[in-house]
Image 1 (cartoon, one colour):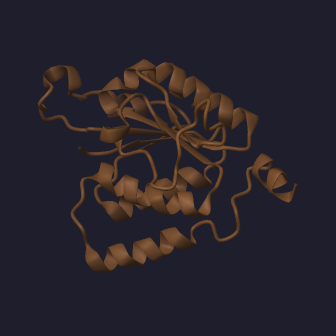
Image 2 (spheres, one colour):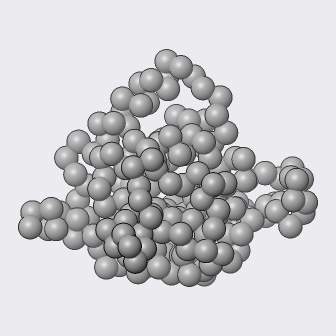
Length: 200
């Protein structure tokens, strides 16, 4: 009962960042040169150990977004207690469902797609900001360079447009330490959604 009370009051577990802080100490020592989407996956692995209500997902891009923590299991008919949702190619639905989870309380939702495809969930992102709820959007393959998929996957104006949205944190971390700090801010921000743009 105390645990249900805690999550519905948006209180994080005691010592929720213990694993994350140990990880950061190791990163400071090792100084790895990961792409920031890989850094995000490593951070998520640590966050999932300390925050049982963390619920992830991706719009059919789990393998590319690296949004599934190692301890997470898929939510489906066979596993109704799972904490990772495979949304399919449904960015807007993903955002809408995450908004619903945040409003209901009891879960801390995040979901990923390519930054270019953020256009498909822009309205849901804007609603997160208007409703002042904690939802984290993980947007990978951030590059103004032309990637292997051509100009259809080339986000140019996206960060500028999201920085113009009131009450939305728009992060663009450059290394693993900054990625971890962005995640920490996102987790601790009860009334502001976050968008984390990550490199390929």
